[in-house]
Length: 315
Image 1 (cartoon, one colour):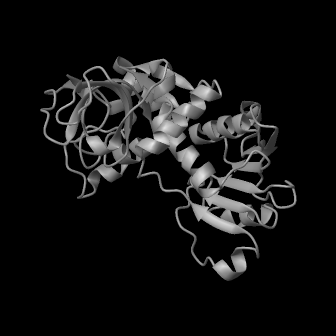
Image 2: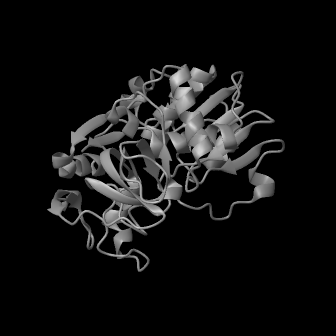
């Protein structure tokens, strides 16, 4: 089969397809015929930095998510041809991931789905929608009457969060730090240019999804009204931790701070996501589509930040 195989630091212009054996099935794992997959910042980090870490078993096929069909169900009880999505659980790091024509994946991170979405739209869902869904409902406890602030909304996760919140009935205020990207937030009720400080510029916000992360988190905490909840999920600001953060002084009285870690998907949550997509007649958005033979070009576009939204690769 064709696959991308990493042995060390690999800039996007060095990504290429090679021939490797189709994985052999073993108990507790299923062989998935990959039909499409999303590409993520996580895989960029792996290619350019993390591949050197001792816990990465090299060589490795990257890719933390995919959609496809069961090629060999092993002992899972599933059927050949059954439509599935897979994400996280060590994909592309602890074991080979989705940048391949076939992927051998542990049963506990593969989820059968019932959907009529085409493969490209379906590939925009697994990791992105799971993270948005968990952030909005598990962490922010989002309700139709909420005013939701999405800080750093011009990314795949931001666009998914806008789609979900608007379908629920919320008022959405979305931000970007680039004026040229304001038109991309047309799905929100209000698009705001983020000039580092939002406190006093946005009003009535009851819930906030912060995708910029620690860099501006203190300001996000003071931008919501009393009783509001802030969920820190992304790290677009390039700052990974908050040094000198004082929870007593930096979290306003009556405001709540939480965060979402997307490593633990479940069948019940995936079922809820696809039920919501079906009931609300949503077509998940994505910014660009590439064929598998153009995987190098897809990685270059990702690394150069040229894709507005999710990039998907069809196999």
